[in-house]
Length: 318
View: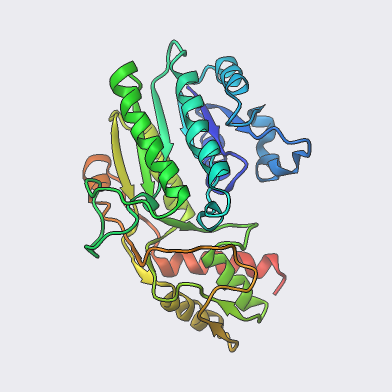
């Protein structure tokens, strides 16, 4: 079985690639962006000999088509995207070109494959956006995207539905909640809080009252492998531990674990990208994934936090 992963040099994509290489049952291809400096493949450098790596920008249809045709995968796991929601307000064209146009390019490249079985697409919890009903969202909740990033993902979802109806493309869509467990990047909320506290620096919480579900990276990877092994197609699934917590409560929880004595400041840091709006509540109901796929989160928030705290302690030699 041949599986092509986009975004394999990033957080989730690299974790998926490592897991599939460990299982030794697949031939794995990866699409990495075509940069002159190849340092961005550091996340997969230890398994590079087990991968077929193709350098192509998602927005370059000719390069994408050539890479897909050359590898001829049975499955595509498309997690490659511009994902920093906060940055999408200042770079809306870049986000939509990479996320929407890039996905269209991959879809049409996949449609030319003779033995293609399924396209697995990384959408996001962010597609639900502004909702008056503050209860965990089910998959049938209408989307109200609240950022250029979220709009690009909603557009992709509609394109998959069209491509399935018009061309017969088999697909599955993942809407996962916020995921933590980054080993090299402290630019996201959980890692930001942990690293700032370990370094005894002030901690900035831009949206202290905002409620989010938080999923450990291993659970997120297992969601994609579950979709990969499922016989289902043309459907959408939420993935989440349904553990909604406010960002201030999250900071207090980590503060207690680290015995942190510094300040928690309830606004964005001075150099934070312009973000005019943010959703006050994003939480998912993942009952459908449990019922139809047998998927459940295995890591509690405390378990996941303890694991990633230990990683960053060692990394920072503290």
